[in-house]
Length: 448
Image (tube, rainbow, N blue to C red):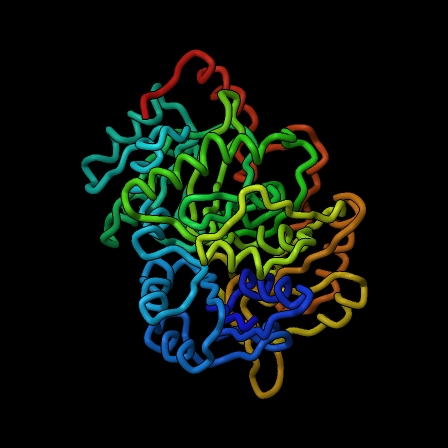
């Protein structure tokens, strides 16, 4: 089988690494890829944003399957263009990818499908902000949750107890020409679950948890993700079944009923609240860095699974197999991330990290004069496995610390609380707020 993967980040490197371990291994091509991907696949100079170049490359290669990794080309219509050219594509159409491209439209779909989610208000003008915050945060209930209603690479969300900071973020989004979704705060730990869909049938992968805050202790600004782990020993054993029943299948059915079949990965960002399961957000692709740990644990072949979904032949009773080992990934970010990032710094020590037993996923790297250098905010993702979470996280941290990148930073507490029955939220709110919010939620249910 010949597979073309569109993308250049850590998610795509993780997908390609897992595909390369299939038996027999497919012939792998990437556009544009990165230095880590180039060790496993043939890379081609077709930018993620150039849909014409992607079609021309596919016509040249004639792949059996095209896998589109990032959200931007999906929302821009890459899958549509490639399907129109006659190729089998794993990835939703532009219309279906609108689930990620517009949070307010995703709320509409959830409401129509009866999917439980946070109450919200969409705001398009400054004069609507105060009333909107009051509606979703009655009695000055905090934290405030403010989301840019569009693609923001995981960094368009502010969760804060400071009303002024919430308004400032919302105003910045509005000034830039966007709209804002104001949401009710959801208590409880967060879970990410990838669900593969062929437009009508759905198959879940293993749950994971990621860490959005930049600093230890869930402090600092939101990022695209600073680490993740899987499995979740504290999560309900029937969590995937519940998500299928309550979230994924109703959503896929609603999309199909609107003649917008969703083919690809429905990323379900969830909160296990005091009132039950709630959807935080949908994404239309594999998440990063959760992909690194989920695919690390998948032992059944990946290529046939993606191909079946792309062809509309997904078997819901397919028995996926998973390693009993735990997997942890720690993201190494460049100086300044997630604000003004510094790129072009040399990277050394990857061989030393891998000699310890971990493997290193390239997310934001490039080569300059034959040397590996940083080329993005999240530069590397160090993945390790172990018989339990503590063993995996210890190895991941040791391997991360073997890598040298001037000014870089990483979190040291990824998966530290993973064995607790109900660890704190990855967003890092104050526990006093959680208790206050939980008590109020027990007395009321807000209208969606």
